[in-house]
Image (cartoon, rainbow, N blue to C red; front, side):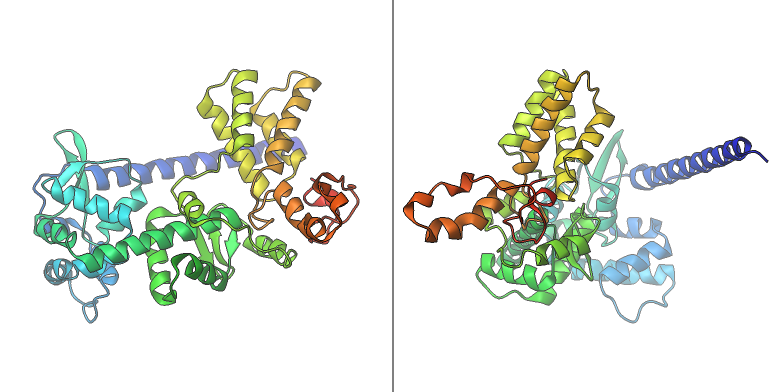
Length: 402
């Protein structure tokens, strides 16, 4: 059999497999759509909603409530237990929440038990369903979120519980600081993260409680990953490499972000849009006549490529796949923007510094201890084959001078 025939057969096989995967994905989406947004009558009762769930779904609620000795119960028996325990354990279930989840719950309760559904992800719907708190469906042609009648008053009462609201506010800071630290540093060990959080919170960290809060937050927000390498931004695909790069710069402290900066970076979808970022966005909108949203998306990917350690050539390859370079002048103009962006982007490998900041940081001892005529040496040119001043041990051209 010739290579051409084999290649065609392979191509057909791959296309069939791809078509099968697409159909499977579509079927799953349709089932999920029906499950989440089927007809729903209001007011909603807990007994009705639990009765409509499968035994597996009820077991999931049982596990989240940490109920013991009821795993062998039949469905009807388990429904009876959950009807009693969900309202009773409401406060305990809400204690790991942050302000966003608690606010959504109380907003529905204050609105008579149901409201038009905001933009909410399927996994976020499942998070609340798996605790028996919020159910979804279509009512009068509109998608809604609903809280069972039995829980409306208990939820509203929780708002007046100062202990609960204080813990939720603390959780919110824990989560945002953790997400912010991972946004700028990429990956941190549990010990590093705990030490940093204690500094910002100005109190000892109760590690077990913190880990429980972060576990719950990540089930809902999906902002970070956690494994044997520590805590990582969700876009870090090689945490071991990030930690290795950090170790290569042991003499350099992590960039000293303020608490305000980290809380801001901990918000969902945050991307630092500094002057170089905004200049690149404006350049693309003018040079390629694209809208700002499209340009913003492209520059965001360039920032991400920089954070994972790609150099200018890799970034240019990506840009070449989404933009049309008309001339060498165009290539040079874009390259200038790329280099400017990369030099001013805070990077995981550089412990949160930009290459420019790290170079200035590394040269500070020289400026502080040298004679007066050495002032301004931060502009001194570094040879591409010289050791990088960041302390990585690499040549400048292979590190911050990329």
